Amino acid sequence: MDFLELLERQANKYPEKPCLIFQDSSITFKELKNISFNIAKGLSNLGVRKAEKIAIFLPNIPEYIYSFLGIFILRGVSVPLDYMLTEEEVVNFINHSESKVLIAQAKKGIDLLRVRDNCPGLKRIVIFGEDISPYTEEKCFLAWKELIQDKGSLIEIKADDEDYSSIFYTSGSTGHPKGVLLNYAHFKTPIETLEYFLHPTDKDSFLCAGVPFSHVGGLDYMLFMLYFGTTLVLMERFQPLEFLKNIEKHKLTIFCIVPSMYVAVLSLKEYDKFDLSSLRYAVVFGAPSSPVLLERFHKVCPNAYLLNGWGMTETAAPNTFLPTGTQTKEIPNTGKFPPGTEAKIIDDTGNSLPDEREGELLVRGKAVMLGYYKEPELTNLAITQDHWLQTGDIAKRDSLGRYFIVGRKKEMIKVGGEIVFSPEVEEVIHRHPKVQEVGVIGVPDKLRGEVPKAFVVPKEGGALTEEELRFFLREHLAHFKIPHYFEFKTSLPKNRVGKIDKEKLRS
Image (cartoon, rainbow, N blue to C red; front, side):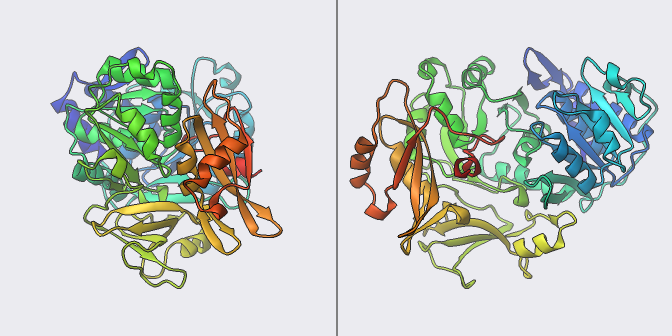
């Protein structure tokens, strides 16, 4: 993908159209091009060349998008870092990626002077924000306003889709960080997937409700805005009430959120008082979803298709959507793959399974990552010799070619020889009218090996007892699937993408 050409084309086609709305201000496609060009020039003046790595440590603000585009114009490699990382993690990822420049906003608990001292390969740090006084005497540091000054002209750089484009870190702090390495061709995958299933036009408008730009799902919003000429409304973080206000105020047509965000929206007393008639698509991503939740949400936006989708950082998500026209109650957890991507279900011995049989989902095609950066052993564990990515998701396929995610391998609970998947148990518990949210994990048991444990958040004002829940579940689940333990909570921990953090529940 050639970002230089794309920015010029959309700036000429939609010069005065808002491409980005953040809080109370907007920016046009023409302004986006000018700022992005200036950042590219500024980085070039700092000595950044093609294929060099530039780390970004910012909250979800427009400057994250401008930084991405400035890097991509130079055909550099972006290293987006989550703004919730610790200083140790920031240092670890900068060193692992070999980043030469860091674009950052100062944050409590992060000493950028220490970051510089502990990152020997880091040459310059660009500071965004009001107070940069602690760094003004340091030659390594540069203010954002200096970076974006219009200085000189862009040097012509040959665009090659095989050039490395990004390293997305999916986990790890000190041990083995997993940096998913993508090239510029990978950026076509989410665009082609969206175009194949949803057919967006320049009349559409997207809502990015706090999905971090350090995640490939956040970057996708920028790609959609730029490629389709749509308007993107950006929220720095997910807030249920502001989410609904933005849809109503800006007449938004498409959003993608994870199941826990639907739970938060439906927990608002006034959620059904908003006008959501502009919505064309409401998409759920990131974890197996509850049809019960989606049916409730669908009542306030009956004009919209409610769709499921699937994808991984390792496959330049999204990769699937449920075809439009499917009824909410029929929604599977994944959907179909577009042309150009192969998928299959295998058993523990590696043999392909027929329809309706559960096994591990494998994916092959142009969407699959190049590998984990500087981690050949991890790459070889994830990708087979014949180029199949082992996703770690347990799934099945129906006769219509739709894929259903049953759960993650690590969410498989072995109860006395019987297999239980957490999402199945969670879905049934969600049906109880007094349950707001639930997370299920496996815990050790001397007799059975493992048993399910459920962490349950009751609805506000709803008194719910363990006995009441057990009685309900006996009508819907086999006895070995019913949680052995229940723990009632006021809230459940979430990760930065908004999914329930099962690791924190286990700890």
